[in-house]
Each structure stands twice: as structure tokens, then as C-alpha cells.
Amino acid sequence: MNSTEKLQPAVIIDTSGYAAAGEEIRKEAARLLEQKIVDAVVGYQAGRRTGSSQPVVITDPAQAEKLVFSPTCVNNLSLYLTKAKKEIRAKGKLAVVAKGCDLRALAGLMGESQLKREELVIIGVVCAGVHAAGVASGEPLTDATIAKKCRECSVHIPEGADLIVGKLPELPNLSPTEKELLDKLDAMTPAGRWSYWKEQFTRCIRCLACRQVCPFCYCEQCLCDRGRPQAVDTSPRPAGNMGWHIVRAMHLAGRCVGCAECERVCPMDIPLNLLNRKMAQELKGLYGHEAGLTPTEKGPLTSYDEKDDQSFIK
Ligand code: SF4
Ligand code: SF4
Ligand code: SF4
Image (cartoon, rainbow, N blue to C red; front, side):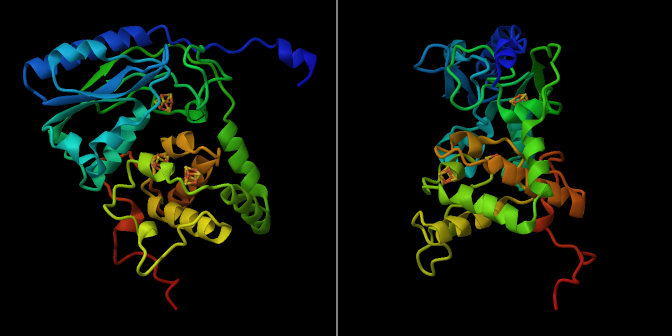
């Protein structure tokens, strides 16, 4: 970086409306619980570090005062509504706080018959952006601290929610850093791309945090954990890592909604959402399908049509 670049002021993104959105979330959660419209609300509460936040499930209207909304509300709360979280579903009818990108995951889960719209109250929250992984809680939201996915967001307003709280501020134009990298990868030779991904996946320690946080990894037994027969080597060695990432990408193709939670939690900074986006691009090109837009639609790789192209079968 040269000295002129150092003097460039950060582009501050206006999040002054987040506190008011939090107030509206608290009011609505208390009302839903008081009137027994729902049995529990999944939202965000303040975390242990000053200014941070974390997911919370409340069941008592008095607990609604805990709920907050800020740029640290990074988690995709749809995860807590999947069958991987049976104890939360067992509470009864649920309400959930959802940003636009989380709402896409809810729609995808409905398309896969994992959730029923009528059994869910969605408190949509207008969102200008959230922090990237590793940003300190008290930092303002700027072009340097915003999550990559938010730089290209098209769902700031969560259309389709039961209630939408908050107001969209004027947003700056941010360069689409992830798209730029995707274009660079597309311009490489297949061998160049293979070597890029091989290098990324070599760093994987198989902690499986990416799987645990993904709303679409809800299988009760993951194929990659099976020992007899073993589909994928479970130790973090290059061949097994490549197998795991190929299986992961294929199982999520046409289902992944690009919430980037897998990438956020990866301790090895592997650019997983780049691969997700590449797969999504292919699915759009081949089938015109975009995951999470229609709550009644399954991904093309999980449905069969007699008119499907069969020419690959020799
Ligand atoms: S992708 Fe959009 S809705 Fe999701 S956190 Fe970023 S700005 Fe908010
Ligand atoms: S979170 Fe990262 S390191 Fe852990 S298994 Fe996934 S890709 Fe590998
Ligand atoms: S694969 Fe990653 S980006 Fe896609 S839905 Fe799962 S957690 Fe979100």
C-alpha cells in the first residue's frame, strides 16, 4: 500500500437504524410470546464480549428485552430450525429473526420440505451489512470491515417475511471482491484452477465446522462420517480433503444459498463461498436455477424430469 492509499478514509456504512430495528424485534417477540402465537423466538442477544452478539432462543416474553440487532449479528439463524437442532424444534411453533440472506435459507429449507411456512413466523430485519470474520465487535461497519457477501447483497430487504423491521440507509457502491476473484479463476486453465483449489484444500484440518454451521447439512448421518464402507478418508490428508470438498460441493449444488456461514467459521480461511458461488453459477447456467428464491422449489439435482438431458449416459 502506498502513502496515498493509507490516507484514504474508510467508507462508513450507516448502521444507525440497527438499534431501532432491535427495539422493534423486542416488541414483536414479546407480543408473539405473550399472545401465544409462538412458543419460542430464535434471535440474537448480546455476547460476552462488549458489543458482540450470539444466537439465543427465548420462550418467555420477559426475555424479549435481551434481543438485539447490530453488525455483529452474523449467524444465519435458519440453522436452529433444522432437524439437526431437534431440541429447538421440540419447543413448538417458532418465530425467527431473519436477514435477507437468512430468509433465502429458510425458503430453501421449505423447498426441501424441512420447514412449513405456516408453522413459522419470520421477523425480517432490513440489513445494510454485517462484520466480516475476525472484525472486533466495536468496529464500525466500513468497506474494510464488512463481510464479502454483503458487498454484493441483493436481499437487503427480506421480502416475504411476516413483518419487516428497520429501514435501509443509503448504501455506498462497494467493489465486488468475491466476484472479481471468481472471474480470475474462470479465466485460468483447468490445470490452474485445480492447482488453486488443491492448495486451498490441503490446509483443511477436517474440523467440519463448515458442515455443522450449514443449514443444508442436516443429514442425520453424513456420508463422509461413514466407516463401513468408507466413502471418504476421514483424516486430514490431501486425498481425503479433496474427496470431502468434492462431496460437500456436489451435495450442496443447487441448494446452497450463499450465506457464507461455512467460510465465516473456517479456522483455516479456506474460501469456501467462492466454490459455492462457482457451483451456483453453473447451476444457473445449466438449469436457470437459483437456490432460495422460491420456497416451493427443490434444487435441480434433487428432482427428476423425463425431459432432462440424458446425453451423458453412454
Ligand atoms: S448478505 Fe445482505 S442481508 Fe445478508 S448480512 Fe449481508 S447485507 Fe445483510
Ligand atoms: S471449516 Fe475449514 S478446516 Fe474445517 S473442515 Fe471445513 S474447510 Fe476444513
Ligand atoms: S454451503 Fe455455506 S454458504 Fe452454502 S448454505 Fe451452507 S453454510 Fe451457507
